[in-house]
Amino acid sequence: MSRMWWTTIVCLMLGSAAAFAANPSQMSVIVKQTQVRATPSFLGKVLGVLAYGDKVTILDQPAGASKSWMKIGVPEKNLQGWVSASALTEKEVKLQAGSENVQQGASSGEVALAGKGFNEEVEKQYKADGKLDYTWVDRMETYNPTDSQVAAFLKQGGLNTSGGAQ
Amino acid sequence: MRSLLKLVPFVLLVLALSACASLDLSAGNIVQGIQAGQKVVEAEQTEFTPEQEYYIGRAVAANILSTRKVYDNKRATDYLNVLERALVIYSDRPETFGGYHVLIMDSDEINAFSAPGGLILVSRGLLRCATNEDTVAGILAHETSHVVLKHGLNAIKEARKTAAYRNLAMTGVAVAGSPELRQLTDTFKDSIADITNTMVNSGYSRDLEFQADQMALQIMRAAGYDPRGFVAMLQVMETKLKPGGLDFAKTHPDPKDRILRCGKTLADAPAVTTTPQAQAARQARYQAALGTI
Image (cartoon, rainbow over all chains, first blue to last red; front, side, top):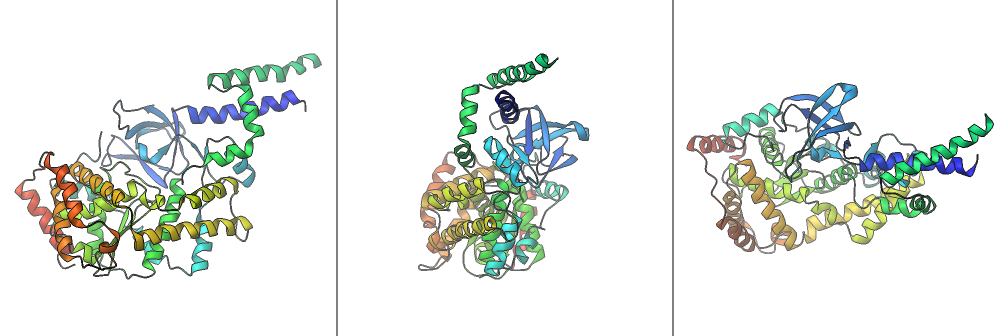
């Protein structure tokens, strides 16, 4: 293949990766899972759930400085609503990347790689090395109050019931 | 036809370069970037991703719990987790990779640990410094602030962090039995040791503790709690801490200093008012969950 072909292909690849990172209209979910809500509030009605690595299109950003909520859309799921900005990243999150893709992705300087680095495999090895017991760590992660519990708690205690709304 | 085909890469190159130009990238920089691929890779990771933070936090919590018993009381733990959620949704970092969770340590010492990512361990001794829900909220808001401000991750020694980022950026997906996994696990182990040692033995710097105190006041106010509850908790703590103790007496600034600084912040802040009914409801549920802690 000619040199010009190679240069063209590489430019196109880099261009598309850079476009993802530089384009604020697209973001990725950076937490295990997050809720898409009807209103910008942690107590807003849940319209859908997104998982780590899911891509969203930003439809609206609050004008205020906090930018704590993003109005997003997921066309393939026919889903629109609000997601906490703390659950999103401008970087692309690639799941199940093979080592080849990892190197390629990292080279662009714009890709956060899921499952790379400190991951479940590292935890297994670390646990085995130190004979550590994770039973209670796993159990404490099962304490997840529901929205209705939190809403009732806030209301009963005369606390802020906006749910973090902007 | 052949001559037309020869033009295809040229046309594509022009299109690609014009696309790059719109992103303020020149062809020269791109080629330079490709040639200096390794450097770009090394510069790519400058902080831990939320997923990596999550695994670090789990390991820190497992380490701390390896030498401490858990107070297995569902009612008390449920209460603290609902209260924690009621606070974090008003913080600057309401969502972490695995979320915020609270567990009680069955110990008389006055102690708490905030593992990166949001795993919060609080002792029965510390909970006894609280007298009502607002003061418990103060304890959790302070611990939450350490997570929001990533104080745990920052306890990893700089040289170790640099090495860790390099390993994380350069190594592919580690599979069981691979040398990459061994190398990553060693880096992981050293990082966990740095954090655990800081939390258990040396403590964060006074400045970081004061930062967490100030943020705790903000979170409490945003959630609707009276931030003076935090000061009230510190006042009780002051009377209970024993000099030479291996708990907050060793790892935290003197409560007197913390009270002084919080007092200055609160002096100019508007009061948070609560109706008697709401106050009574808070007290009733606090008593039911933690009254005999």
